[in-house]
Length: 372
Figure (cartoon, helix red, strand yellow):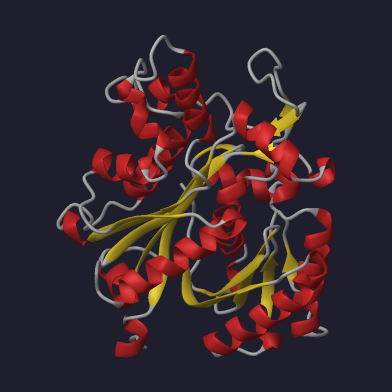
């Protein structure tokens, strides 16, 4: 039966890719995730002289090797991770994307951009003979939208270009923002995702900002393609999931996270038009232990006796910071592709940020597809 006109206009995810601690590409991420691989390894302290002994790094990631020499001399690690992830996504799902580059938007989430670049540039201005004796080619790396701007320029994307920052919720906030661009017809297709780099400076900041028991840090970039169901069908892409809705909230003290997440989850499910008992997959966040327990308890409070498949990315790829929710999203897609019987079922992605915000997104699984 053909889709109704309304279903044809639904916002769907029709492709995804990842540059992750498992390696480059969607298949490598899915294989590592579903195979139970743990990407956290011991750090070489001569290269990474920070406070942590272990982390989950993108293995052997080299800007020149991945992207070539042209345009990468002054590019920082965060930008390189994002440009690589966006490129892999576009290469895999190129049909129709080159016809109207002005109709393709890019929404990319980040933390503070590249903390390493910001601090290095600031240091150069302080220790140099004069404050302006700095490398001007490296200044763009100090602004938060560097990765999004460089990705759009690299691949000729001329639609709206936006950078979103919201801690561990960033991936969900980016998806929500992309949905508004789509509904208001600012673009027809949207590349959406988030990026986080591992660096010595980020390590020191995280060391002082969170409990040492929170676990190792990770890095990477996860991206996904958003378009209407009709557009996906016309270009031969698979409807991996339909975006049903999101909700966000806040809490004023750590012990109130459970209540805030429960309200947020109930609201998102209500907006999506599904019942709590419909949830079959739950992807919780990379939050520290106390908040993570409240997050899971809150979802259980809402969905009752339902026992969804629950998958924790952080156990395998560490705390990927601003990219964590984006990795949760692509992990949900990987699970849907691994289990075709989930077609039509509901996935819930939740996140809690230690600064006092919560968020969740509801997806309905579509078709399965073999990864390449």
